[in-house]
Amino acid sequence: MLLDKFQNYVTRHELFTHQDKILLTVSGGVDSMVLMSLCVNSGFRVGVAHCNFGLRGNESDEDEILVQEHARKYGIECHNRRFDTLHEMELTGESMEMAARRLRYTWFNELCTTHGYTVIAVAHHIDDSIETFFINLLRGTGLRGLTGISKQIGRIVRPLMFATRKEILDYAMQKHIPYREDSSNKSTKYLRNKIRLGITPRIKEINPRFPFIMQRNIERLEAAQNFIDYAIDYFSQQVIDYNGDICTLHANGLSNAPSRDFIIYEILNSRFGFKGDTVDGLCRALNAENSGKRFYSRSHVAYINRGTIVIAPIEDNDLCETLITEGQQRAYCGNAVLYFDICDVDLLSTFNTPDNVALLDADKISFPLTLRRWQDGDSFTPFGMTGRKKISDYLIDRKISMAEKRRQFVLLVGDEIAWLVGQRINDSFRITDKTERVLRITKEII
Image (tube, rainbow, N blue to C red):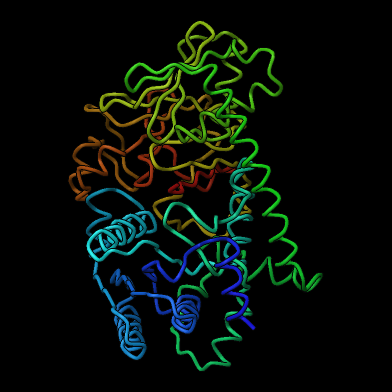
């Protein structure tokens, strides 16, 4: 029975006790509504937190009403907060997912401080963890990204990580637990839904026990990552010096270590957010003793200096300039990643693309391309126009917030801006009836 498995899982992994005061994060979906039922029926002390992000109109309001009514039925305190998520995105330049995540966890922590909650319980389960595994696998992650979703990080716990989506749905049906279905869960616009609706059902047809097999695999991967973290901490103490917020990694101290480049990747990724492709390029520069070349994560810059790697926070006046070579599949800019591929024009299903996708005539492109932040004096000819326009004026016309302006990048062919990234291409590089090959660039927020 799900209730027994839940209680055993919580006890075995010491997620919380009857002395804890637990804040349940309840959206109104089946997972969180079942978690509320399991906690109440197990006698735990709980309160409920519900976020209304105002992104789905009446659906969001109906979610809020269901959670409030069900909490009242159980006789437990219900905290509710409405957020102006779209306004927050404009202020910060974050994606919807990132803005919503930051808003809700900031509020959850405030509730813990104000009301004495010791644990924040989130209703992720096995299937969520498997989907995260595939998402990270497709994006090209290290081992850390293949460990799925952790069952505990600090006071955030996930007490349903033993259960599948089917088990949760079956329990809701048996116990007549009401829940709301988010209509966006059926849209294949999102990568997670493509995996949920397209990939995992087909694997389950081959082996119905796939979720439980993957759970064991992820647990083994997590154990391996824990061992790696222990080793990386040891190496870090030997080769890293700090001077304020500037870090120097003495790579020659790893000359006798196995898999030197892997150790460098783990240090730079876990501490400073550098991604695999960037670290690969950095290690090639290190091997070639190419001092001075700069590499960027979302928040830091790293460069080679006489056999050492120096890492520092990105300064406001840093253009974050990087070169894109022919055949390179992706590059990082600020809080986004750009994916590059060249295809035959006849393979395009449509020329109408969202702002995060650029279609450029590949035969008008010469490598390497330059990716950097925009600067005063930059101008281009926006697609569909004939005259040149300053980037600053274009951003003002589009009512781009100050935070977004600071994150705005441009992609150049030679000295000419080909794409105001995520906004508009240069008309000079547009597809015409003479175009044969297309350079397609997709921007994704990370």
